[in-house]
Image (tube, rainbow, N blue to C red; front, side, top):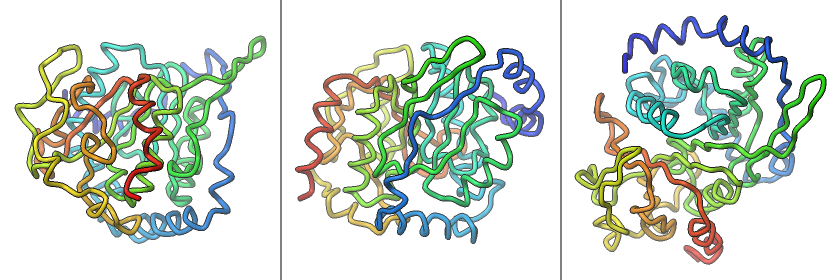
Length: 306
């Protein structure tokens, strides 16, 4: 997996995919919008917070205005593992919420040339306007739209051409990268529930081991079945309801396996460090197949941290 090749792809990604899209002449659209959140006071507060972060480069500028973690170095391992996920499973559509400024995503050929649709949603209007300006006119199967992952369910989508129209399509993969740690714990619970109840097949997200360091040797690779415990070591010593009581846009070390999120670690199909190649933080990338067990777990979230 070559970082230099990724950088080259970022600079040259327009022409090939444009030809492909125009040739099959499908038109893609979302079946619903996130209108309800636009009049919600908590959504407006989060929107203004993340607009301020993006507009004023409060997370720095590393090529990406979405922070150092969204640089090519910061996403190297995510890109590598996403490629493996594509190799093992039929991923034809992606909902990426929050998408940020998409500095890294389209350096991966499998995302850039996605078979059906890439949807990038973000609560920051500034982010969405920039992405629409950069991509919308040339890439008919890339949609960028305001989306509040906390207060709006994941949308379905429609594709049509001159003879066919098929709506109600659910996304294969939902990516929630470097996001939950910036949400108040109760908002994070709502966001995760929206993902799990969306009808998607796979959920990829960022999470921090509760012991404050990488959970190795408790790792698992796509296509393998290395043994994993039900719960990572250290959960009993954490109080995430307190740790996660942050202002949206702040930060804490979220964990998807400990209470109150309660995802069984041994259900993950991927558990790997997010920054093994270029060390930055000790967070991990997890991927889960969404099933009935996870749906039952998220239905209990209303009672959590009360």
